[in-house]
Image (tube, rainbow, N blue to C red; front, side, top):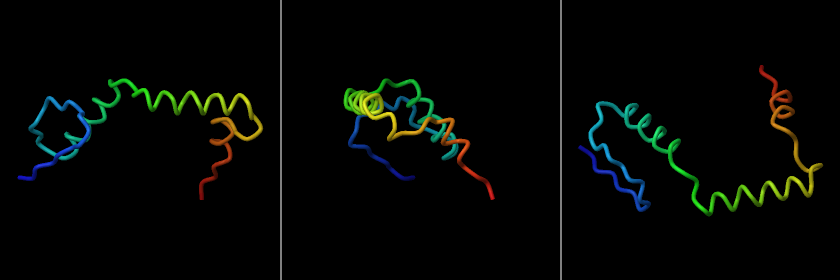
Length: 71
C-alpha cells in the first residue's frame, strides 16, 4: 500500500479504490463539482479584460480549432 498526501485541502471523502482509474474518475468528478478559487476567478477576469481591450491579440476557439491540421 502507498500513502499519498496533499498540502492542499481537497476534501477527499472516499479512501478506498479498486483501481487507479477509479481514483482518477473520482478526482475529476470532485473537481468538476468544486467552485473556482478567488485566485482562479481573478486570473479569468484579467484575461477577459485583456481580451476585450486587445481583441486583435487573440483568436477565437473556433478559429483555433479550424487551424489545427491532422496528419
